[in-house]
Image 1: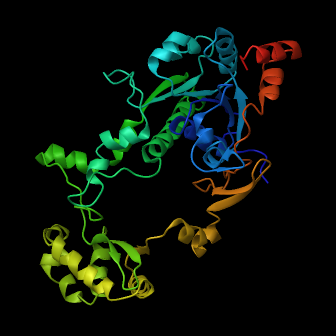
Image 2: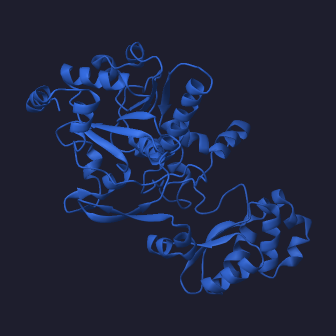
Image 3: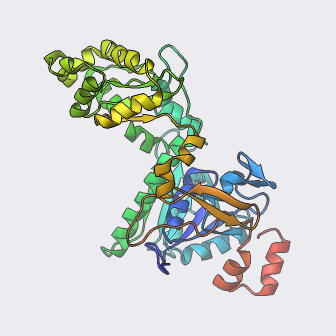
Length: 399
C-alpha cells in the first residue's frame, strides 16, 4: 500500500456546497490531497439530504464526501470568518461557490485572502462566472443544461427539450475545475509562480463540449434541431431495437468502421460504392442507411447482433441499465466499482477513482463523514485553539 499519493501535502479547503464545487475537491482528495470540508453548523451541506437515504444518511453525500475531513464553521458571523481566514493561510487551495456579492460582504475575495497567503490558488465556481450581467444570479446545473444548448439538441425530433437525469453540467464543470487547479499548482510549484484566482462558470465547460453546434452555426447560421439518437456528423449512428426487445448503440464515426458495418449487415456492395464509401455522401443518405441498419438489427436478437459486429470489428455496445453495468464481466474485472465499509451505513458500493495511474493511483479511503466529525482535529490541533476557546465557540454556534 502506498504511503504517498500524487497530491500528498496539498491542503484544500472545500467551502462549496451541493455538487460542482465540492466534486472538484472530491477528485483532488481521491489522489491524496488533504481536503477540509467546511459546512454551516446547522444542517451542513444540503447535499447531505439529496436523494436516497439509508438509516437517515444521504447516499449521495457518502460518495461525494469521500476522503474529506469535515468541520463546521458559521461564516455568517465575524468570529467564524476570522477562523476561516486562519485556515486559508495554511492552505494551498480554496474552493468556493458563493456569489460574488457574498464574498465581498464577508471580506473573502481573492485579493483580500491573497494578502496573507500569496501562494493561494482560489477556485471560484459560479453558474455564470464574473464580469457579465448574470454574474450575481444563483444557478444550478439544470439551468446550465438548458442555457448551454444541450437540452435543445437532446430528445426525439418534434419532442420536448430533454434535461439529463443526473448532474451533467456540474460534473463537467468539476472536472474542468480539478484540472484548472492542477494548472495553477504547476505554475506555482514547478515554475516558481504565485497563486491565482480561477474564475470558473459552470456554463462554459459544457458549452466547450458542444463544439459542432457552435462551429456549424458560425459557418452557416444553422440551428440544429433534436435528432433523437442520430447525429448529423456521422452515419450510421443510432440506438437500435433488437428482436428480443433489447437495444444496442452503434457508431460509424471512423470511416473504416462505417464501411465494415455495411459489410457486416450484408451490404459490402455499398462499401464499394462512392455514394456510400464517402463520409459526406453517406450523410446525404442518412435516412436510407439508418433504415438498412434498423431493419437488419430488428430481425436478430441482441446477442446475435453483437456477435456479428464483434467478429467484424464494428463499434457497437448494448444499452445497459445500472444492473447490467455493475454485473458486466469487464467492469467487474477492472474493479470500476468498490464496496467501502462505513461506520454509519455498513457498506456502500461507489465508483472507484478514475483515471488509473500506475505510480500514484487514487483511492477511496473512507466515505463521507458525519457533520463536524473532524472539528477537534482541525480547530484544536491545526489552529491550536484551547479547549476553553473551542467549547465557547461551539456554545455560541460559531462551530
